[in-house]
Image 1 (tube, rainbow, N blue to C red):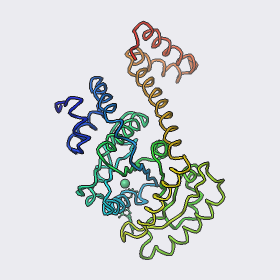
Image 2 (image 1 turned 90 degrees about the vertical axis):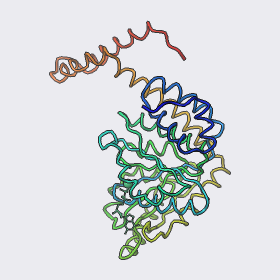
Image 3 (image 1 turned 90 degrees about the horizontal axis):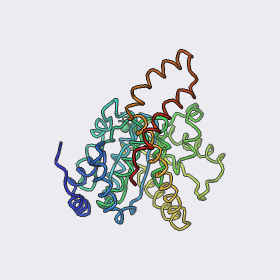
Length: 336
Ligand SMILES: Nc1nc2c(ncn2[C@@H]2O[C@H](COP(=O)(O)OP(=O)(O)O)[C@@H](O)[C@H]2O)c(=O)[nH]1
Ligand SMILES: [Mg+2]
């Protein structure tokens, strides 16, 4: 294992925008060791006054829609505007695939070599909640290191969209054309979360189809009630290959940020996200503490079997494990 630095060395390095130290601090944050955790919390506390200044953008869409390719082109567009960008990912499957964004990094080859860009593969973890907490903390470190735009890509499917929505200021949904059925297929909830929809791969033969899809989504979004922040999510088209539609998307994000800062929603949203983060952290902490309890580990399989054999009610099994766990913890003092 790499030698740890002191709290001051991490903080100073991050604030000086030293990428090597930033990477080492992120590794520290991703560590499961209790001592690393304590160190990581001190580092986070130390950089906290220098966080919060970035625009946080979440990008989602089904696998193959072109997220990684889009981030490569859009990222290059952003760095050409002289802005520094960090790309992170939420990948609940990374445990199994050992970080599929690593493969994606080859799709972001140009961006990966851009001195104004920083790409960090998704941390691995047992739970989406755990991975999400680490991604949030990583985002703070990147902000302290001077990154002005943070992009969080959802790599997995399912719950990860909600998790990313809960940590960003602006949520971009990428969609494929040739829709129709697709329009029915996309989960309504995800459409509702989007601050903008972009139809990807609007190039070559696909251009007309993309424009048609755009109109369909414009109509579909009209059916939704207005959002509480008074924003009407626009629908755009883009091509990451031909690098078209990128500046339009950028302008939408800029307008959104200006409007939301003016009407107070930007700040309100972040405050609510911080509260949700605290609750998430508590849930995650309690859950991992419970499942790491040796007594729970020793008995859970037996109880599982009893439930499968219908010899025990699920509630009874749960209470048996919980009671043992609680008894054990009441006696040990809790240090806050
Ligand atoms: N024609 C065209 N193909 C694209 C575009 N963007 C991505 N692709 C292709 O779509 C496929 C999936 O892209 P990828 O970025 O890996 O999608 P992801 O799974 O959402 O990250 C790849 O074969 C890309 O080359 C685009 O703008 N135009
Ligand atoms: Mg990808």
